[in-house]
Structure formats: C-alpha cells, structure tokens
Amino acid sequence: MLGTLLVILACLLWGMDTLIRYPLVERGINPVTIVFYEHFILTILFSFNLIPNLKRIGELKIADVFSFLVIGGLGSAIATVAFTESFQYLNPSLVILLQKFQPVVAIILASIILKEEVQKQFVAWAFVSLIGGLLVSSPDIERFYSLMVSNFSAVTSDVAIKGYGLVGISILGWGAATVFGKRLSMVGFETKSIMAGRFVTGFIVLIPFIQWNRALLLPHGEDYLRILIMVMISGALAMWFYYQGLQKLSAKTTAIAEMFFPFFAIIVNWVFLGKQLTELQLIGGAILIFGSLIIQLKKY
Image (cartoon, rainbow, N blue to C red):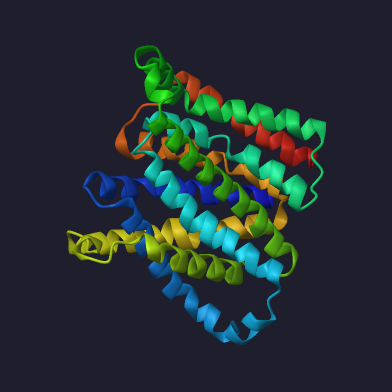
C-alpha cells in the first residue's frame, strides 16, 4: 500500500505542475525550451550525486546503459518533445485522450521484459481503472466526438496521422520508462542514482532539439524562478516519491497508479483555477480509486 501511496503522491505533485507550466506555455514560451531548462537544472542538482560515482560508470553493463537511455533519452526527453509537438497536428482533446492508453503499453512491456505475470483478475481490474480514467477525461471525449461529427477529415488526414505517430512515441516512451526504471531498481540502483542517470541522459538527448539563439532566453527574469519552483516540485520531489514507490511495486501496478495524474490535474484546476468538475469526472475518479485499491489489496 505504501508504494501505491508514494506514486499517487507523485501524481499529485505532477498535477500541481500545471499551475506553472501551462501559464508559461500560454505566454508563448516554447514547451521544448521549458523542458530543456528543467533537465538543465535537474542535471546540475543531481550531478552532486553523480560525480562521486563517475568511476562506476565503466562498470555499467550494456543492459544498464540501455535502461538509462530508455528512461532518460526516450522517456524523459524524446517522449516529452513528441507529446508537445503532437498538439500541432491533432486536436488537444484527442492527444490527451490517446495518452490514457499509456498504462496498456507499460503492462504489455512489463510482461515481456520483466516477465511480470499478468493475471486475468488484474486485467479485469485494470480495465475498470482505465474506464475510470477515461471518464475523468469525459469532456475530452465529448470534444473529440463533436470534432468527428463536424470535421471528420481532421482525424483522418495525413497531418493527423503524423500526430498519431508523435502521440504513439510519447505513449511508448513513458510506458517504457516505467518498465526500465523498475528494471534498474531490481538490479540494485538507488533512487538518487536512477534520477541522476535519467536527467543527465535526458539533458544530453535534448541538446539537438534546442534552437541555440535568443529564443532560448526567457522573456522575464521571474520565469526562471517559476521554472525552478516547478522543477523542485514536479521534477525532484515528485520523481523521488515516484521511484521510491516503484521500488515497492510491480511495473504493471505502478502503471495503474500513474493514472491518478490526470485526475489530480483536474482537481488542482478545480481548487486553484475554479474549473468545475462534472458528475462523470467525479464518478470516473471514484471508479479509478476503487479499481486501483482492489489491485493493491489483492496484490496482483
């Protein structure tokens, strides 16, 4: 139960992240630039843990190096960039809706790579949790349906297909990051070491995506402080809770617990921004909590 609570707490902190991240994006700051600064700050922060262990880098196995490339390069960098870029090709509601299927990818990869047993009962309750997660996004489903009725070509064009590919990369990247993060914990890596490897690798992989010109500079000095606060909450603290929880849970159970992120994001918007919750969203949240609780109590 403690592991699930730690992952859920991480999801709560990720939900609070929206109070800073989205206002920065709405003011015209390139999302990739924000992600770059996040990794830059976190690399500096965790380099203090990485430097004493530099001599051990040569002792890493190929499988360990590959795992860090997956969680940092693919999961933390490329998947985030792909998710951000997908909004240019697809309706945002469709992007957010498709992202709800990330746990399915994580569960499949966990069974293949980590040989985690996926019992029929787990699949049933995971499906219940997924339904809850989709109901939490019921406004996005309604907007997607309206889009299909009014402009079907918008979801079938070549441009839309490119958007699906980008969303697919983000789903695969984040799902794989959960599985390979679990693998690293299984072979003895501590939370701080996993986080250091994740952020440093992500930072290196992000470098080619950055436009090295004045566009990299933020328009206001206080924006740097906002990003720093966001990094400490959703980057350092949330990821520490997440990996502590991942050590105690299977990758497939962690994937279900991660579904609380969009639910908490909606709750945060309700509490701080006054965006009302619908009855379907509340029902979806209750179903998600119930399904996740059963999975935890039954220890599937």
